Image 1 (spheres, one colour):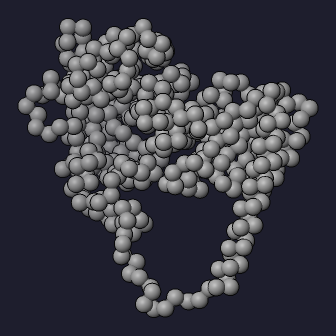
Image 2 (image 1 turned 45 degrees about the vertical axis):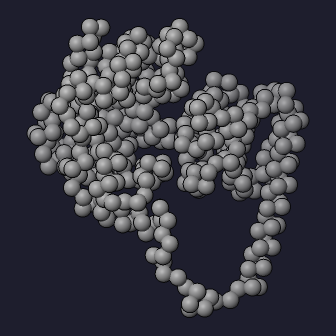
Length: 418
């Protein structure tokens, strides 16, 4: 599978023209990433999408063409519908915070991509490729004209026109990020350190704590730092900040392992953090017999963004004696997950009040099959803030639960809400 970033439109037309006589074995997907919000169209994010396609379809003949307008066109041979659906799902999940991926109701946005079955739609696709080439040519001509005009009109700005670089700082700038990073490295994380129980619940509502999740409460952290930036508003900012928090958390746990690991716990870490020197230092401070009672949670979005890194991290963790939990699964993503192939030990499914109440509904039957494939005893239904959520999970065969409803049962006098 080739990746083409230079003169992609021209090379795409050449490639499409070359498969005319064998088009029935080819498929194409047009990812409309030119419609992504600006914060999701960076070179870094587009490159992650390209890498995902290259990894998933590495064994297939074809190419990934990155156009001038940031759209991506995948051209591939002898790929099944299931393989294409999986690739599209993973890219949709990568950009899940952008309205191009999912509409406000949580349904898949049809504008995200267009699939061409070239056995029946070759002529239409070829004309589309030629149109992309014409658009790219016009864009390049306009860019050249603009550059020439700027060169001719360029004059140095007068001193009074140079503004203070700190003036008019927006919610998220490199300067602001540097301030947040500085404050974060000095912050007392114990003030925002939280623990929430994961519980087994019987049919008679006998609730038993199985282990606790340790985490940093992000909104409280933002308030403590008096940060104007909403950390959760930008997926990439949040990812960067969690990597900083991983370092602080690992330092804290390494300094006092006996204090934090008196009972079974789960910890959230990025893949990069698990493979880092800091985690190695943490592991050295933890007694071997304690490791079997520690669950390491990895976000499913991180898995899709770096499958090779996940495999390395999973193998390392399980070799050292930890258990691995796949966190962040939704009713859509759990049906796409193969536990045996990914090799995780536990999975967290997020409760959604929009789940159909009728267990016999087609959506719930698909979720039920996915839960059975994972193993009901390996699935944790999280964000259970009501009894309804627990009742739904029990009807689906789930035994483990996490959420404020369980918090109130375990500790009715708890004043700080998770």
